[in-house]
Image (cartoon, rainbow, N blue to C red; front, side, top):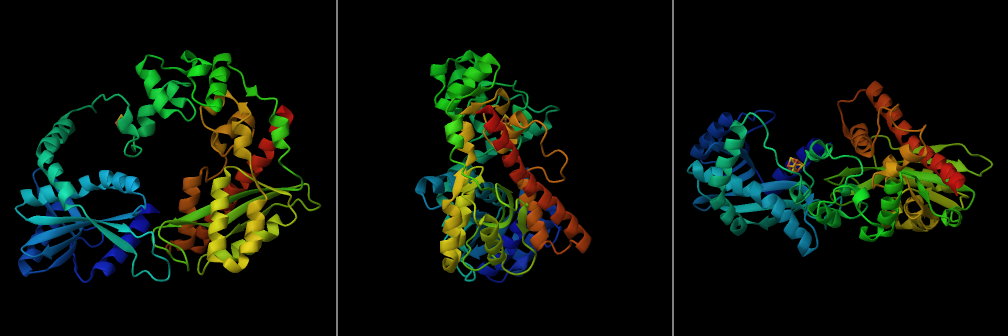
Length: 456
Ligand code: SF4
């Protein structure tokens, strides 16, 4: 899904930039061939190239956009993420992405090609479909690449030395695993940590690091007072005693759930390049829901999943309003997600605002009811449904389904709506898998509330 959307972003970036030669069309990305075709294009006098690159200094790269700028060249790296609004977030983006352009400048210099401009191109958060003329925003990072370019010879030499080793270096886990973003090897390195390691402490990343440095590596090494929030204190008590803790206020908290109840869950698709009116880059759009009904004369399960072609939102709104009609409480797990999607729908379709906000205002969030009243050692510091369910509803999981978690569902929806290579049979199979997954999410909430009532 990310590759497919990345290709769509690339195509738009080329149109946005203007005519040029694609040096590496399709899968024609052999570095030596790219280097040769780039040099040939330069010799022909081409002024703009896409996917141009060089092999030099023991490294190689391809630049998304490589264009002449006076006597030298300019490199632009296109990103599929939005340029953030806040300065602090902008700085984080630059910390993450400037090295990508710095290494391109360095390899070009090693290849005796002068690059004196470096830019990053991001999706513009102000762009709204159907006007995609302002889809991109460009940030000049020439100055920021310069100190990195100077540091690269030593860094590249170190990387080569590591690559020549037979074994991966033995580096302890640390801040580098999550900063500036989660390392793709995170699970591999952290799996080896024992259960109830201090890093599992709820909402306490910084404190956990401090305690680990002090030699308190396990949650059982901590006192209540050392846990930084109420849920973490309950976690410490539960782990130390090896038992599930249930607060006496749970019954009162469950009183927020008024019958009849609809247990509700959205699935979304997130498109880098917006396809539907009013949508911006990377907006999450609800295209599927499951609704289990309890306490109605008709408790049939309701659901909706978009079909390919056209704007999926009006039909989803119709089906959602109908499925939630008459519910005193609409129960979700982590309300910020569902409420945000509904508010966005109301902004896109102001004529449906009253109906949508009527659904929005009946939402009750199950997550804080669990978080503030129950801790089972098997939660392992997380109150996500995927952690809470196996601990509290032991006979209901996702293992029997073809789609077992949200990321796969999102990618499945993307393929269902946009992958032209899927034949009818494959679409039908994917649709069935998606419906089964979303239905399991709301069934899980029904069963979870049953267990919570028993515990209360
Ligand atoms: S998770 Fe990534 S950054 Fe952390 S130690 Fe493992 S490989 Fe290194």
